[in-house]
Image (cartoon, rainbow, N blue to C red; front, side, top):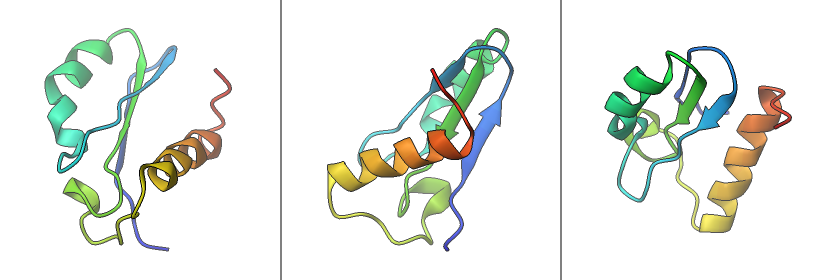
Length: 79
């Protein structure tokens, strides 16, 4: 499995921040700095982008959505 970068900071109710096309989790820097004071902020870099640029990218939005759901499941987030 190729390594995927996921930032996971703060504590409390989890917020998942997903970047757009050609972005990376770095685009959320200011939001993460602010929100992590009151929330658990999780921001993955999708495969093929940003900090996960070495991982093979998916060829559909559906596969990217499934990837995010899988990451949430791995972290045992229920809500």
